[in-house]
Amino acid sequence: MLSPALDLLRTTFGYDSFRGQQERIISHVTGGGDALVLMPTGGGKSLCYQLPAMLRPGLGIVISPLIALMHDQVTALEALGVRAGFVNSSISAAERAATERAALAGELDLLYLAPERLGMEWTQAFIDRLQVSVFAIDEAHCVSQWGHDFRPDYLRLSVLHDRWPGVPRIALTATATPATRREITERLALQQAEVFVSSFDRPNIRYRIEAKQQPMRQLLDLIRDEHPGDAGIVYCLSRNSVEKTADALAREGIPALPYHAGLPGAVRAANQNRFLREDGVVMVATIAFGMGIDKPDVRFVAHLDLPRSIEGYYQETGRAGRDGLPATAWMAYGLADVVQQRQLIDSSDGDDAHKRLLGRHLDSMLALCETLRCRRQVILDHFGEASQPCGNCDTCLAPPESWDGTVAAQKLLSTIVRLKRERNQQFGAGQLIDILHGRRTDRVAQWRHDELSTFGIGADLTDVQWRGVVRQLLASGLLAVSDRFGTLGPTESSWTVLRGEHEVWLRRQVAVAGSRRRRSASGEAARSRSAAAATLADDDRTLFEALRAWRAEVARAAGLPAYVVFPDATLVGIAQTRPGSLDALSEISGVGAKKLEQYGADVLDLVASAPRRE
Image 1 (spheres, rainbow, N blue to C red):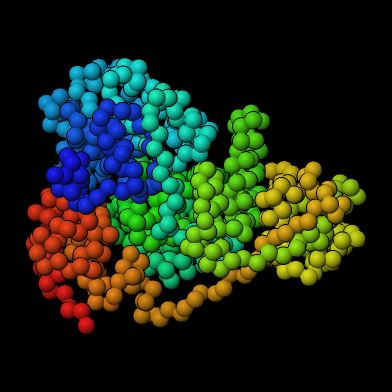
Image 2: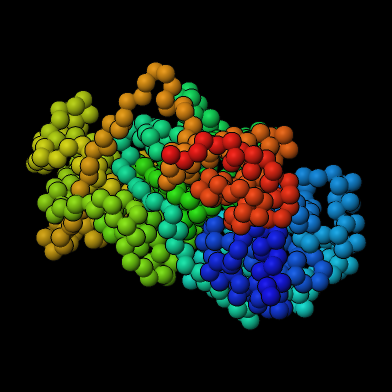
């Protein structure tokens, strides 16, 4: 006999078995216990509250921070036959009243609410009239006041414990250091909750960080060579760079859209809607975009600017490959990023303690960028998880060389110190490199820097190498950004290098190669071939693409995101197994009873008409 939870998992959601700690969590919450769940994006957090809500009497209330995504979350559940609804400011009074009536009549399994709604007395009075099976607090890290996604309304969610103490609560997040975990426990009054910590590892994501030299060309190479036709997200720090990057990609024939808080709400909504519903769209965005994105087939996340912290970076890169298929987390990182982030910290609101905290976050991020170790190990270490080298990041696949940069560091620091002592001057990296190279530029002549004893002593390194030296000294605290103009100055640790008391080992800088392949004028670059099917044989890949085209038509006609019909992972399973009957199709992961009834015949027709394997 199947347990009720496993039976529901199979018939409704189309999965044969639970993953990781899902079964333990679901059993605990269904039994009435509180839980704090730390699980990576794509690890199956949603099932941990959806199943208890459906198994316990009443309806589950889900606190979700993004009202723009509630509609898609509910749509995906309805496509599975789950009775779900949402109440937020995007719906009319009549729609809200209809949802409330359905909830009171016992016609809903799940009701999604934004956190600010719980601060309203009428919402609390409405909940008093319901039989609530479970409260789920999604994206629980938003309660952390010094976190990267802090939401003030989350601080009031202790009302769930105070007003409805008999209802089990489950708080879930994919991003929580031990300190954030303690903050969640305290602020949400979850001291008695059982804590479930899954591995933060996302083995299907390949982490790559490279020197920023020609970032737009580097990004184009990533998309064209590795992810043609794939959905992806490109993160930029400023609104201006978002729009410029989206325009540049669009001019190259890539369907790219901008997203940032400065765009009109209707434009943001339309762009997000297109990204979620169409295959192969690239969203270029600030960090205003992405939290809670349910799109499982994002094949790459690219950063053109340095994130502020490993927590933010992990959260953003975690939006790739939620379906478990191979995905890429790529970043181009340069000296200007380090200078800019240091300046942002110095000019930020908050006291000195807060600025020191931001500085520690940045230091951890810089250490990840400059590490000689496995990148995945560094990320997992940050979250308190020990691991072995992964074999699937750039430092594992092509181990970087290190070199003794002590003399180079001394030359650079000596130039900085002499400028300050002898001329009372400070400059940025460009002028310092010109001095070290012995270039007689107009600025060098203007300031008579050719008279310095260090003029020309650094001609043995290229500009790229010198920028690498500057960047790595900044990352290791051996150099500091002195003011808002980006001038550089020594730190206390700099003197140990100048006195020869401290060796400096650096990561060797490698120039970025040109595009790895030439593209014909006939449009090879524009041809869509999803990386999700990269491991399929040619005949199976042909069937996968046919299924993908069919899915796009069905989704467009129904006004659904394509992944709601079937995610890529399910299409890959169909292409590999080629089921010949409804029973065989039902055995494929992601094919539940309602989808089998709705789409089964069409899928079997496509399989039957596909070319036979050679």
